[in-house]
Image (cartoon, rainbow, N blue to C red; front, side):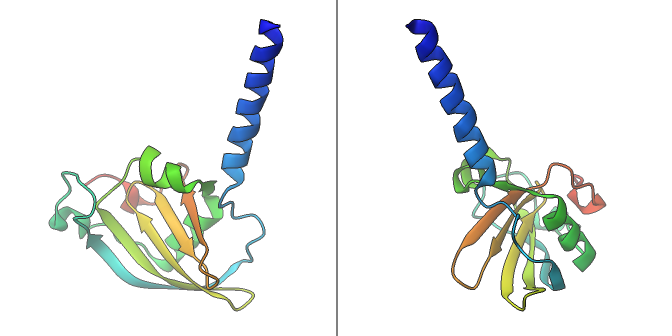
Length: 139
């Protein structure tokens, strides 16, 4: 009986982890047609940390960096984005147009967290541990 309960708990844990990976998944989003970087090297005081505005000034993303981020990133849950992942005061933001014509707003921070806000109000959260653009390196 105990073995059966442990197996059930383990399988529920695997199913929950798989579901969490699908939340905010980029699957099904059309390709990005254009990217506009509206703010680079930005600093926020909404997150605690040691980064200074001067250090954040070096966090500069080009449109190709943004495309690469969303191409490589995995979906993250809102909880993971807001509580579990490392955060940075340094960020960039802008807008993009998807190949199907929909506009979207984007945000990416130095710790490789990102979000995409779609016109229907949905926000998709991402993390890109594989992204290696030099901008992501600590100052």
